[in-house]
Length: 491
Image (tube, rainbow, N blue to C red):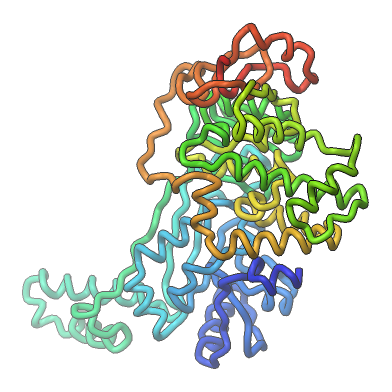
């Protein structure tokens, strides 16, 4: 992991805690949360105030997230909003905590000037023992106060002042006046400098969790679904305790996943995606696939340039990955035109050739696609860092070197620009997904219907069901390719 850390690809933007005042405040908060303190004079914290150094010191790498129940956080500065969130068991937590900090920034700035702020992200589900429990996570409530209860004290003083203002003959109530004076000694002037943190409550329609081996929960689409990395959980009776309207799919059932995305208009071809340089994106994907294959086959990639990778590919023979064949066909079409290559969901290149459509599920679908297109390491790093770090440890040194250099050169220097080039503009806050109703949904993918394999076929309006002209290919494709036709419609 040393390469990643040196290039700022791991633990980047962590907040350094090295002043005695900050260490003392953190220890007060840590004592309140865990009953323990740190002896470290210097450490780093993430968005939620979690420190891997302290986790290692106290022998508890989940000390702010016991049993994956109510995630707690410690704020020493509002600058933590730019830090990453480590060990997040729910994909939405970083965005929600950032929203909370932005919504209370002036108050938090004032509070953290004198004390640490301790808070909790409560999903209102006490324990998650079975996949069915994940469907109970509908909202997350974020609340916070300082270790000295300054917010609660200020609220108490505010209530006393209001009582003093409204109660008849309050000027003669010596007990009330004495209580206000004592509370004001602790809370300060709450009239001129009000101290109040809004409790944030946020809807959680869609999310990924690391629990149960990794589960995607989609409730925004018309056809709700839970998609499991562990196929054994699909037949587990526990999830079926919930309404049958939630579809259970194994991530390994690629045709079922493709069909579900097609029916709900959740993805689009990269080649025809608005604003995307499809050819450039495909070339980079091919490079990553070739690097993986060359390392696996023991073929030298030289200096790792594109020309060196092409020379390595020429020596692969029958070992040339199927992904390269499909992506190269699409690349030729993008650059030279001609006949549109037909790629179905049984083809290794299928999930490399699509990206999520604009909408509330965009980032989560793109994250899921990184698991279905595992050699696209740039997308994997951007959208699914926990899985990237896990896989990174298994790679050959040559692949590690190549990937780290590529990410440092092409992603680190312009993160926002790279994300927009790959995935499109950030989704708006008020983008409706569509009303519930028929599963045959017109739109980018058109009206999807069961019975044939999902396909990439020519068309100008996105992903939609194909025609009888392509049926023969569907019938001779691999078993995973049976199902609906899609993505791009008639030739």
